[in-house]
Length: 224
Image (cartoon, rainbow, N blue to C red; front, side, top):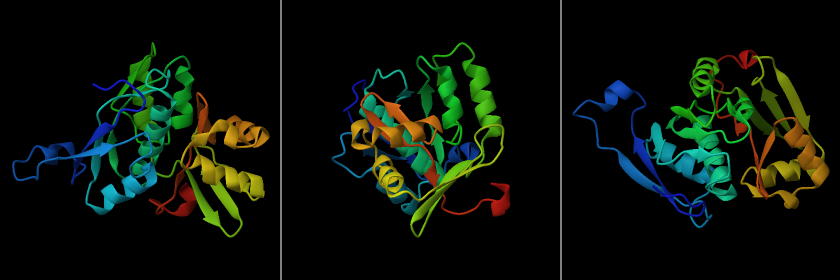
């Protein structure tokens, strides 16, 4: 299994999300897709959209997201952005995460499709179960308006936190972070504010945007 942060990883895709349906002999064979964290191929947003349009409704990643940094910052950022984009399309994601030195980081990531395994924490099974039981689509999303971005965040105890960003420096930062970028490309005060509210993450010398774009409301909008 690849271990370096710049090694392309493989995605296995299916046209149905249900595990029982996948066992039916009449179902088409899964497809293999290569994702390249070096940025030479489609970015996470384009790749997730392309997979959805091609009929993929379940996607499996071939290696864990290692938040300890063992596979490199670029691998962390690419994986987190891809899982977020797939989640935003309502795609089931088979993935694993190793939490590293800060097991509580999962609370900033619990708007992503629940991983099939949580590694590297004494209470990994409890974390995975809580993640699974409390997950729903649009738990932390953003939408763009003319000259502003609004974030709706229910990651903490289900309580709604709403952020409206309209300062040009913050709008530029979101645009950069949405694709992943060097941390020093974003003004330090802006990045510190976003990280402080768990709206951005950092991995080594890179940073990325945590909320995903709302595609459609799965429930009446007041519920999320």
